[in-house]
Image (cartoon, rainbow, N blue to C red):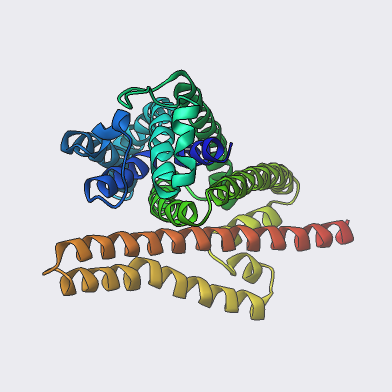
Length: 341
Protein backbone atom coordinates (compact mmCIF):
# COMPACT_ATOMS: atom_id res chain seq x y z
CA UNK A 1 0.00 0.00 0.00
CA UNK A 2 2.85 2.38 0.83
CA UNK A 3 4.43 1.89 -2.60
CA UNK A 4 1.14 2.23 -4.48
CA UNK A 5 -0.16 5.34 -2.71
CA UNK A 6 3.18 7.13 -2.83
CA UNK A 7 3.52 6.36 -6.55
CA UNK A 8 -0.01 7.63 -7.24
CA UNK A 9 0.76 10.74 -5.19
CA UNK A 10 3.95 11.38 -7.14
CA UNK A 11 2.05 11.16 -10.42
CA UNK A 12 -0.72 13.35 -9.05
CA UNK A 13 1.76 16.16 -8.41
CA UNK A 14 1.71 16.81 -12.17
CA UNK A 15 -1.73 18.33 -11.63
CA UNK A 16 -0.30 20.97 -9.30
CA UNK A 17 2.27 22.41 -11.69
CA UNK A 18 3.40 22.52 -15.31
CA UNK A 19 3.16 18.87 -16.37
CA UNK A 20 5.79 19.19 -19.10
CA UNK A 21 8.29 20.68 -16.68
CA UNK A 22 7.62 17.78 -14.28
CA UNK A 23 8.24 15.24 -17.05
CA UNK A 24 11.31 17.14 -18.23
CA UNK A 25 12.87 17.18 -14.76
CA UNK A 26 12.24 13.45 -14.33
CA UNK A 27 13.61 12.62 -17.79
CA UNK A 28 16.76 14.71 -17.35
CA UNK A 29 17.35 13.26 -13.86
CA UNK A 30 17.15 9.76 -15.31
CA UNK A 31 19.43 10.74 -18.19
CA UNK A 32 22.01 12.00 -15.68
CA UNK A 33 21.69 8.74 -13.66
CA UNK A 34 20.35 10.62 -10.63
CA UNK A 35 17.43 8.19 -10.55
CA UNK A 36 16.82 4.78 -12.10
CA UNK A 37 13.69 4.12 -14.15
CA UNK A 38 12.02 0.75 -14.59
CA UNK A 39 12.39 -0.88 -18.02
CA UNK A 40 8.82 -0.20 -19.25
CA UNK A 41 9.32 3.57 -18.87
CA UNK A 42 13.00 3.60 -19.72
CA UNK A 43 12.24 5.47 -22.94
CA UNK A 44 11.67 8.59 -20.83
CA UNK A 45 15.42 9.13 -20.55
CA UNK A 46 15.88 9.02 -24.32
CA UNK A 47 16.94 12.19 -26.11
CA UNK A 48 13.91 12.06 -28.39
CA UNK A 49 11.51 12.01 -25.43
CA UNK A 50 13.34 14.88 -23.72
CA UNK A 51 13.21 16.89 -26.97
CA UNK A 52 9.47 16.28 -27.46
CA UNK A 53 8.60 17.22 -23.88
CA UNK A 54 10.84 20.30 -24.04
CA UNK A 55 9.09 21.38 -27.25
CA UNK A 56 5.65 21.06 -25.66
CA UNK A 57 6.91 22.94 -22.60
CA UNK A 58 8.10 25.82 -24.79
CA UNK A 59 4.79 25.86 -26.70
CA UNK A 60 2.84 26.27 -23.46
CA UNK A 61 5.18 28.73 -21.73
CA UNK A 62 6.05 31.21 -24.49
CA UNK A 63 2.45 32.28 -25.31
CA UNK A 64 1.84 33.03 -21.64
CA UNK A 65 4.78 35.43 -21.46
CA UNK A 66 4.13 36.85 -24.92
CA UNK A 67 0.85 38.33 -23.67
CA UNK A 68 2.96 41.08 -22.14
CA UNK A 69 4.12 42.11 -25.61
CA UNK A 70 1.23 41.29 -27.94
CA UNK A 71 -1.91 40.59 -25.90
CA UNK A 72 -4.23 40.10 -28.90
CA UNK A 73 -3.30 36.94 -30.78
CA UNK A 74 -1.10 35.46 -28.04
CA UNK A 75 -3.99 35.43 -25.55
CA UNK A 76 -5.87 33.18 -27.96
CA UNK A 77 -2.81 30.98 -28.52
CA UNK A 78 -2.28 30.76 -24.76
CA UNK A 79 -5.90 29.69 -24.20
CA UNK A 80 -5.70 27.05 -26.95
CA UNK A 81 -2.40 25.55 -25.72
CA UNK A 82 -3.71 25.39 -22.15
CA UNK A 83 -6.90 23.69 -23.33
CA UNK A 84 -5.04 21.10 -25.40
CA UNK A 85 -2.55 20.48 -22.60
CA UNK A 86 -5.46 19.54 -20.36
CA UNK A 87 -6.06 16.42 -22.47
CA UNK A 88 -2.41 15.40 -21.98
CA UNK A 89 -2.60 15.56 -18.18
CA UNK A 90 -3.83 11.94 -17.76
CA UNK A 91 -0.92 10.70 -19.89
CA UNK A 92 1.70 12.71 -18.01
CA UNK A 93 0.19 11.71 -14.66
CA UNK A 94 0.24 8.04 -15.65
CA UNK A 95 3.87 8.27 -16.87
CA UNK A 96 5.02 9.95 -13.68
CA UNK A 97 3.19 7.35 -11.60
CA UNK A 98 4.76 4.40 -13.42
CA UNK A 99 8.18 6.02 -13.23
CA UNK A 100 7.73 6.67 -9.52
CA UNK A 101 7.00 3.01 -8.82
CA UNK A 102 10.46 2.00 -9.97
CA UNK A 103 12.20 5.00 -8.41
CA UNK A 104 10.62 4.43 -4.99
CA UNK A 105 11.36 0.69 -5.09
CA UNK A 106 14.97 1.42 -6.08
CA UNK A 107 15.40 3.82 -3.15
CA UNK A 108 13.75 1.41 -0.69
CA UNK A 109 14.84 -2.17 -1.48
CA UNK A 110 12.46 -3.52 1.17
CA UNK A 111 9.60 -2.44 -1.11
CA UNK A 112 11.11 -3.93 -4.25
CA UNK A 113 9.53 -7.34 -3.76
CA UNK A 114 6.10 -5.70 -4.17
CA UNK A 115 6.88 -5.16 -7.83
CA UNK A 116 6.94 -8.93 -8.26
CA UNK A 117 4.24 -9.75 -5.71
CA UNK A 118 1.70 -7.28 -7.11
CA UNK A 119 2.79 -7.86 -10.71
CA UNK A 120 2.97 -4.09 -11.30
CA UNK A 121 5.33 -4.91 -14.13
CA UNK A 122 5.48 -8.16 -16.12
CA UNK A 123 7.71 -10.98 -14.82
CA UNK A 124 10.37 -10.13 -17.41
CA UNK A 125 10.19 -6.47 -16.30
CA UNK A 126 9.70 -5.18 -19.85
CA UNK A 127 5.99 -4.31 -19.84
CA UNK A 128 3.31 -3.00 -17.49
CA UNK A 129 1.07 -5.48 -15.71
CA UNK A 130 -2.64 -5.17 -14.89
CA UNK A 131 -1.99 -3.73 -11.42
CA UNK A 132 0.52 -1.33 -12.96
CA UNK A 133 -2.11 0.06 -15.32
CA UNK A 134 -4.51 0.42 -12.40
CA UNK A 135 -1.91 2.36 -10.43
CA UNK A 136 -1.15 4.49 -13.49
CA UNK A 137 -4.86 5.19 -13.82
CA UNK A 138 -4.97 6.32 -10.20
CA UNK A 139 -2.14 8.77 -10.79
CA UNK A 140 -3.78 10.00 -13.99
CA UNK A 141 -7.13 10.50 -12.24
CA UNK A 142 -5.51 12.36 -9.34
CA UNK A 143 -3.53 14.63 -11.67
CA UNK A 144 -6.64 15.34 -13.77
CA UNK A 145 -8.74 16.21 -10.73
CA UNK A 146 -6.13 18.61 -9.37
CA UNK A 147 -5.63 20.19 -12.79
CA UNK A 148 -9.39 20.73 -13.05
CA UNK A 149 -9.50 22.41 -9.64
CA UNK A 150 -6.53 24.61 -10.59
CA UNK A 151 -8.18 25.45 -13.93
CA UNK A 152 -11.36 26.57 -12.17
CA UNK A 153 -9.43 28.60 -9.60
CA UNK A 154 -7.47 30.64 -12.18
CA UNK A 155 -10.29 32.83 -13.57
CA UNK A 156 -11.79 33.26 -10.11
CA UNK A 157 -8.45 34.39 -8.65
CA UNK A 158 -7.83 36.69 -11.63
CA UNK A 159 -11.23 38.34 -11.24
CA UNK A 160 -10.97 38.57 -7.46
CA UNK A 161 -7.57 40.27 -7.66
CA UNK A 162 -8.53 42.47 -10.61
CA UNK A 163 -5.73 41.13 -12.84
CA UNK A 164 -6.25 40.90 -16.60
CA UNK A 165 -5.09 38.14 -18.97
CA UNK A 166 -1.87 39.93 -19.96
CA UNK A 167 -0.94 40.01 -16.27
CA UNK A 168 -2.38 36.77 -14.92
CA UNK A 169 -1.14 34.49 -17.73
CA UNK A 170 2.61 35.10 -17.16
CA UNK A 171 2.06 35.09 -13.40
CA UNK A 172 0.43 31.66 -13.52
CA UNK A 173 3.08 30.36 -15.92
CA UNK A 174 5.84 31.47 -13.55
CA UNK A 175 4.15 29.91 -10.53
CA UNK A 176 3.45 26.63 -12.33
CA UNK A 177 7.03 26.24 -13.57
CA UNK A 178 8.53 27.23 -10.23
CA UNK A 179 6.07 24.85 -8.57
CA UNK A 180 7.15 22.01 -10.84
CA UNK A 181 10.80 22.42 -9.87
CA UNK A 182 9.99 22.76 -6.17
CA UNK A 183 7.51 19.88 -6.02
CA UNK A 184 9.68 17.43 -7.96
CA UNK A 185 12.71 18.25 -5.82
CA UNK A 186 10.65 18.01 -2.64
CA UNK A 187 9.09 14.71 -3.74
CA UNK A 188 12.56 13.26 -4.42
CA UNK A 189 13.79 14.25 -0.96
CA UNK A 190 10.65 13.00 0.77
CA UNK A 191 10.74 9.66 -1.06
CA UNK A 192 14.27 9.09 0.19
CA UNK A 193 13.15 9.73 3.77
CA UNK A 194 9.77 7.97 3.73
CA UNK A 195 7.41 7.39 0.78
CA UNK A 196 4.41 8.15 2.99
CA UNK A 197 5.60 11.76 3.16
CA UNK A 198 4.81 12.13 -0.55
CA UNK A 199 1.23 11.11 0.19
CA UNK A 200 1.13 13.80 2.86
CA UNK A 201 2.58 16.36 0.43
CA UNK A 202 -0.13 15.60 -2.13
CA UNK A 203 -2.84 15.86 0.54
CA UNK A 204 -1.53 19.26 1.68
CA UNK A 205 -1.32 20.56 -1.91
CA UNK A 206 -4.83 19.29 -2.72
CA UNK A 207 -6.30 20.96 0.39
CA UNK A 208 -4.42 24.15 -0.44
CA UNK A 209 -5.83 24.16 -3.98
CA UNK A 210 -9.35 23.56 -2.65
CA UNK A 211 -8.94 26.38 -0.11
CA UNK A 212 -7.73 28.78 -2.82
CA UNK A 213 -10.66 27.81 -5.03
CA UNK A 214 -13.18 28.39 -2.22
CA UNK A 215 -11.55 31.72 -1.31
CA UNK A 216 -11.51 32.85 -4.95
CA UNK A 217 -15.19 31.97 -5.47
CA UNK A 218 -16.10 33.80 -2.27
CA UNK A 219 -14.11 36.87 -3.36
CA UNK A 220 -15.79 36.65 -6.77
CA UNK A 221 -19.20 36.64 -5.07
CA UNK A 222 -18.21 39.66 -2.97
CA UNK A 223 -16.88 41.44 -6.06
CA UNK A 224 -20.15 40.83 -7.87
CA UNK A 225 -22.11 42.32 -5.00
CA UNK A 226 -19.71 45.28 -4.87
CA UNK A 227 -20.09 45.96 -8.60
CA UNK A 228 -23.87 45.87 -8.19
CA UNK A 229 -23.70 48.41 -5.36
CA UNK A 230 -21.34 50.60 -7.40
CA UNK A 231 -23.71 50.62 -10.39
CA UNK A 232 -26.61 51.60 -8.15
CA UNK A 233 -24.47 54.32 -6.55
CA UNK A 234 -23.53 55.74 -9.96
CA UNK A 235 -27.22 55.80 -10.91
CA UNK A 236 -28.46 57.46 -7.70
CA UNK A 237 -25.37 59.48 -6.65
CA UNK A 238 -23.12 59.96 -9.71
CA UNK A 239 -20.47 61.98 -7.88
CA UNK A 240 -19.98 59.29 -5.23
CA UNK A 241 -19.93 56.47 -7.78
CA UNK A 242 -17.42 58.20 -10.05
CA UNK A 243 -15.22 58.94 -7.02
CA UNK A 244 -15.08 55.21 -6.25
CA UNK A 245 -14.06 54.45 -9.87
CA UNK A 246 -11.42 57.20 -9.71
CA UNK A 247 -10.07 55.75 -6.45
CA UNK A 248 -9.53 52.38 -8.14
CA UNK A 249 -7.76 53.86 -11.16
CA UNK A 250 -5.65 56.45 -9.30
CA UNK A 251 -5.24 55.83 -5.59
CA UNK A 252 -6.33 58.78 -3.50
CA UNK A 253 -8.02 60.65 -6.35
CA UNK A 254 -11.51 59.65 -5.27
CA UNK A 255 -10.81 60.76 -1.71
CA UNK A 256 -9.48 64.09 -2.94
CA UNK A 257 -12.73 64.63 -4.82
CA UNK A 258 -14.52 64.36 -1.48
CA UNK A 259 -12.15 66.66 0.42
CA UNK A 260 -10.10 64.01 2.26
CA UNK A 261 -6.82 65.84 1.63
CA UNK A 262 -4.51 64.06 4.06
CA UNK A 263 -5.47 60.49 3.20
CA UNK A 264 -5.99 61.29 -0.47
CA UNK A 265 -2.58 62.94 -0.95
CA UNK A 266 -0.78 60.12 0.88
CA UNK A 267 -2.41 57.48 -1.30
CA UNK A 268 -1.78 59.53 -4.45
CA UNK A 269 1.96 59.75 -3.64
CA UNK A 270 2.07 55.98 -3.10
CA UNK A 271 0.28 55.46 -6.43
CA UNK A 272 2.81 57.70 -8.20
CA UNK A 273 5.73 55.77 -6.66
CA UNK A 274 4.13 52.45 -7.64
CA UNK A 275 3.61 53.65 -11.23
CA UNK A 276 7.21 54.88 -11.52
CA UNK A 277 8.45 51.56 -10.16
CA UNK A 278 6.41 49.48 -12.61
CA UNK A 279 7.00 51.64 -15.70
CA UNK A 280 10.61 52.71 -15.19
CA UNK A 281 12.49 51.30 -12.20
CA UNK A 282 11.83 47.58 -12.70
CA UNK A 283 12.40 47.63 -16.51
CA UNK A 284 15.65 49.56 -15.98
CA UNK A 285 16.76 47.07 -13.32
CA UNK A 286 15.89 44.15 -15.61
CA UNK A 287 17.85 45.68 -18.51
CA UNK A 288 20.82 46.27 -16.22
CA UNK A 289 20.81 42.67 -15.00
CA UNK A 290 20.50 41.36 -18.55
CA UNK A 291 23.47 43.47 -19.65
CA UNK A 292 25.49 42.40 -16.61
CA UNK A 293 24.81 38.69 -17.20
CA UNK A 294 24.97 38.81 -20.99
CA UNK A 295 28.16 36.74 -20.94
CA UNK A 296 26.29 33.88 -19.25
CA UNK A 297 23.10 33.30 -21.33
CA UNK A 298 21.43 30.82 -18.92
CA UNK A 299 21.79 33.21 -16.00
CA UNK A 300 20.60 36.12 -18.14
CA UNK A 301 17.50 34.12 -19.14
CA UNK A 302 16.71 33.17 -15.53
CA UNK A 303 17.23 36.77 -14.41
CA UNK A 304 14.86 37.99 -17.13
CA UNK A 305 12.18 35.54 -16.02
CA UNK A 306 12.59 36.57 -12.38
CA UNK A 307 12.36 40.27 -13.21
CA UNK A 308 9.29 39.62 -15.33
CA UNK A 309 7.73 37.74 -12.44
CA UNK A 310 8.52 40.61 -10.07
CA UNK A 311 6.98 43.13 -12.46
CA UNK A 312 3.85 41.04 -12.93
CA UNK A 313 3.54 40.63 -9.16
CA UNK A 314 3.93 44.40 -8.72
CA UNK A 315 1.11 45.06 -11.17
CA UNK A 316 -1.17 42.54 -9.44
CA UNK A 317 -0.41 44.06 -6.03
CA UNK A 318 -1.16 47.54 -7.39
CA UNK A 319 -4.49 46.44 -8.82
CA UNK A 320 -5.39 44.74 -5.57
CA UNK A 321 -4.54 47.87 -3.55
CA UNK A 322 -6.68 49.97 -5.90
CA UNK A 323 -9.56 47.52 -5.55
CA UNK A 324 -9.35 47.51 -1.76
CA UNK A 325 -9.10 51.29 -1.62
CA UNK A 326 -12.14 51.69 -3.87
CA UNK A 327 -14.12 49.25 -1.72
CA UNK A 328 -13.19 51.13 1.45
CA UNK A 329 -14.16 54.49 -0.07
CA UNK A 330 -17.46 53.08 -1.33
CA UNK A 331 -18.36 51.88 2.18
CA UNK A 332 -17.59 55.35 3.60
CA UNK A 333 -19.56 57.16 0.90
CA UNK A 334 -22.53 54.86 1.34
CA UNK A 335 -22.67 55.84 5.00
CA UNK A 336 -22.49 59.54 4.05
CA UNK A 337 -25.19 59.17 1.43
CA UNK A 338 -27.49 57.40 3.89
CA UNK A 339 -26.76 60.03 6.57
CA UNK A 340 -27.56 62.86 4.15
CA UNK A 341 -30.72 61.12 2.97
